[in-house]
Image (cartoon, rainbow, N blue to C red; front, side, top):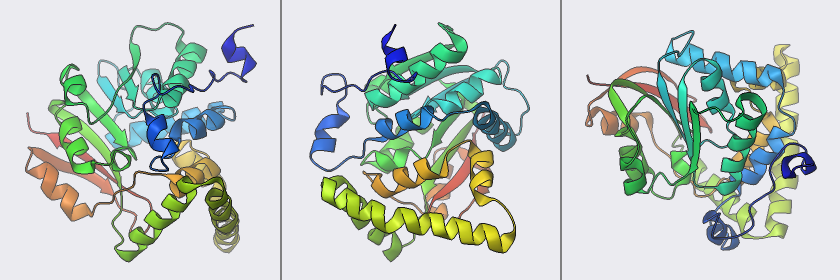
Length: 289
């Protein structure tokens, strides 16, 4: 029996700073263990969620298939969208700073694509200019809900955007700037990451509130918002709540700032999906040819 079999199909967590440099920041209360959250998510991953991720990816980039395309999955997390892109025919390169997240992506590749040479997975940082410069340029660069967790968001956007090939697409999702509300949530995240007691307080305060709000809204709208959440991106609402509550580092951006930053770098907006509240604004930019 292999290691993956002993952990319900998820490789064991990396416990040393050498293989997981994020651990130092975790111990100092400055970083959330995103990979741990994604490993728990993989235990409940279903074919329906994978199909939802494929639909989400195909619809937003405006293509039914990605055959012949290359895709860079920046901060691949669970590896779900890398898997979705590979199933749609793209040649995929996935990387993440967190070794636990890298292990998730490796496990998904093992389950569905074996040793596929068209899907490469590495550990790397979006703030490592040398690492990024060593990568080719890609037809699609996918950075969903990642770059605001680096501690240096605009530098990360700058470095990652340079990996988009001329004429290629940059799918970017960043937390919406809500002013004082964003500062409030920064305090919540610091409390979560600061101690076990803080985490318990945040969990007990907000998870039941989020669940109640979803339930009430579902009843009032006569729609199952829990299911719609899963159908939209293939992600579990609970895992997304935990990611939100603990997600440090944490930065935000207004749509106007994102537009200006990338327009100055030769990108044109194709489409966007704005939240107008907490959560991510999504943008699809095309780089000039």
